[in-house]
Image (cartoon, rainbow, N blue to C red; front, side, top):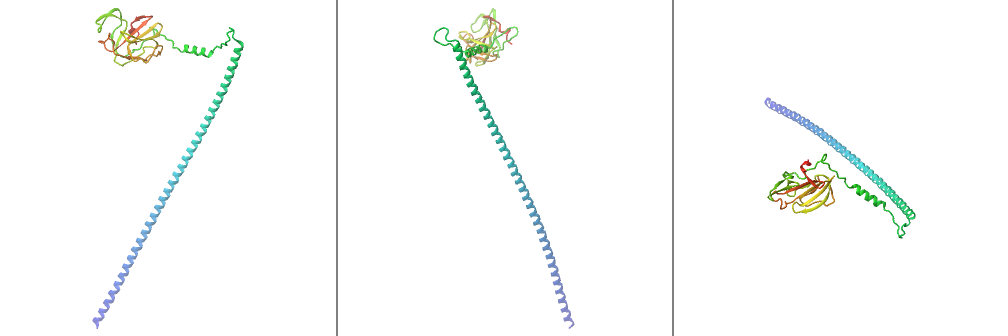
Length: 292
């Protein structure tokens, strides 16, 4: 009997311990669950707060962009209004100027008609030819202006110089006091010019300001141009082609006279060159004394 009671008491104590342990475990699980739920709620609130702040920032940016676009549109509209106002003012001024010009033209026509009428009355055909002669003062003034517009040519050996017409070496010097040897002709003779080496199609410049007085084709120098540079001085260019000038033209120093051509049969061995002669009162002089 004593042994049976001990067994019964041991079973009851073990059951109590199991129940207590279970309750403790349940409490711990419950606490962990509550903590996890609390943490999740806190994170959810933080996330919602971040989303709300991002939406506020985006809304602020959209509002700022809209305000900037509105300001830009307003400024553009203001500029267009100003341009329209300026164009209208310009058109008004042009209209006024045209109106004034028209009025002035009408006045001038009326004045001209009155003057013509008065002139006709004061000079009624003094020769008795039946014709009324009216002096055209405008044409006389225009003719006088045309004469005055012609350049006044002037050249002095003491103060002025000639420009080199081409950039080449002198292959035959000026010589009028003794004869020099011409290779192509194989003979000695006088040379009233300097022969300057050149290349085919090379540009030939005017050595001084002057007027083209003569363009001719000569057997020895081919296409030849004579220019008056003032005070009895003349410059002659030979061995040319494709002239962009004509007689009567005025050229400034450095402007194109023509282009170097193939040499004539008098200078085949010398090759392409420029025949350059200077005269004073019709007599040849040494160009080297005037070239700068």
